[in-house]
Length: 265
Image (cartoon, rainbow, N blue to C red; front, side):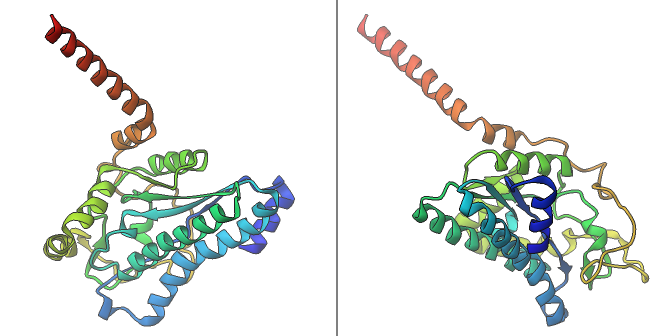
């Protein structure tokens, strides 16, 4: 990360925005995973973002400007079966952001750190992640196209919100855990094991990217183009929440004024 930051500044000038999106995963029951694989997922998914943030802050703090985006997940707030390593890492990133954000505010820094909580995204990740299961990995719900996630990350980098949640499934997971976490445990126990496996069996010669890249250029899209969502109404509402709230308040005020006018007649 330090080398990447140095080379980026040498070629393009001072860093304005730094996006952390390191990720590795294993789809497996916890006791079927090797601890070596568990450590690898944690080091890439959690510490990868920590190292990236450190490299960016080292350069941004003396200039007192810049934005850092931590790419999170709905699973930063709600763990699901078969992804204990990934969920633990995303939870860790969420706590990490709380800490460094408070430190930056205490220092009066203008460097901003935000976190984008994503739903399932239709990238080739489901063909790359390691699995100990008999059938191919798939997202637990209909995923979003990567362009939707990219737009959300771009927007977050240019606005000073602490976090941005993308998609109704993300909100459902976060708020469902807050209000009915024990019930959600039972629901996921019944649905999420089979729900994260496709009908097709895993090929015996399947390769994964846990320790090294899978050769080839696979593009940005995965194999779920026919199911993936191309837009998010929730994201539109989130972007315009201030103007919508003002509009609603104005409308309510108008209704109230009309009501009292009628009563006074």
